[in-house]
Length: 250
Ligand SMILES: Nc1ncnc2c1ncn2[C@@H]1O[C@H](COP(=O)(O)OP(=O)(O)OP(=O)(O)O)[C@@H](O)[C@H]1O
Ligand SMILES: O=c1ccn([C@@H]2O[C@H](COP(=O)(O)O)[C@@H](O)[C@H]2O)c(=O)[nH]1
Image 1 (cartoon, rainbow, N blue to C red):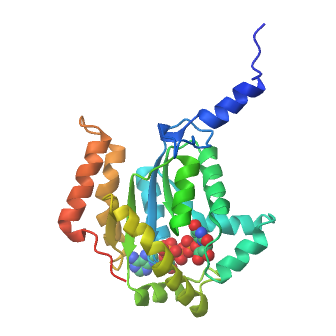
Image 2 (image 1 turned 30 degrees about the horizontal axis):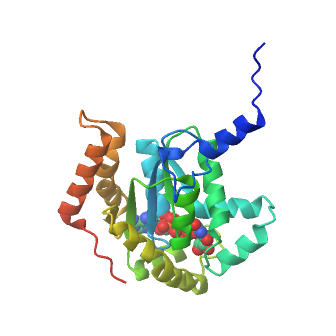
Image 3 (image 1 turned 90 degrees about the vertical axis):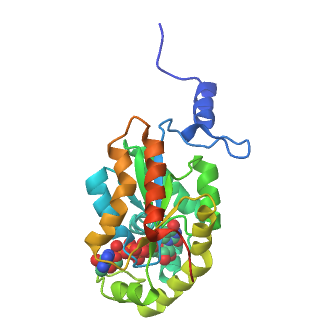
């Protein structure tokens, strides 16, 4: 009689050869147990630029799952996990937590979700984050949303946020700005070379910012006969023609 039990070699094969989006990195298959075609958008921008606020609106309108790397790390502290103290200290200092920790949390959240569309907010924070995420998951982002906002405005927003965060004080905020310019902007520059960055003027009102983002996500809801990829490429082209071609200034 046939049984549902897998042999060890079958299980090994499943874990090591099932690939997200079908790509091996440097000849090493991604270690990811999902065979779904996952669509990921990275949401980047300085601290307080409004990433989380807009992610909530995108979730409501376009059915994405919002994965905030910062929220996952804060949940890890609360869970009493052995890494909790290390993470807490890094966040207090505005430093970037080692990539393996954050990538593992993101990977677990994606695997546990039944959705296939994810907004990854506040990640990758540096080149190490980017490289390890890509090699572990095999996922290339559909595009990058980059929230452009002057430090003065971000500082004003963070000091008014009132969520009791240990890093929303002026001393840590200044450190977070420095880390953002030195480590996170290079990631945006990297994706700019492949035309994946969509710069958003984040100084406008919440609704106006959302209006400028909306066309980039429409293709995920209604796929034309050309297919969603062509529709997305056209939306990105239009976004850039409308005056938002990326020119990152520090
Ligand atoms: N367009 C906007 N205009 C004015 N205030 C805003 C705007 N967008 C967000 N805010 C406010 O600014 C604060 C920071 O916003 P939010 O938490 O979305 O930023 P974030 O980029 O996710 O920050 P962090 O990276 O620190 O998590 C919040 O209090 C939010 O209500
Ligand atoms: O990928 C990440 C994301 C976040 N961190 C740390 O968390 C804080 C807060 O992040 P928010 O995105 O503002 O919620 C950040 O300053 C880092 O210390 C991280 O290390 N890696």
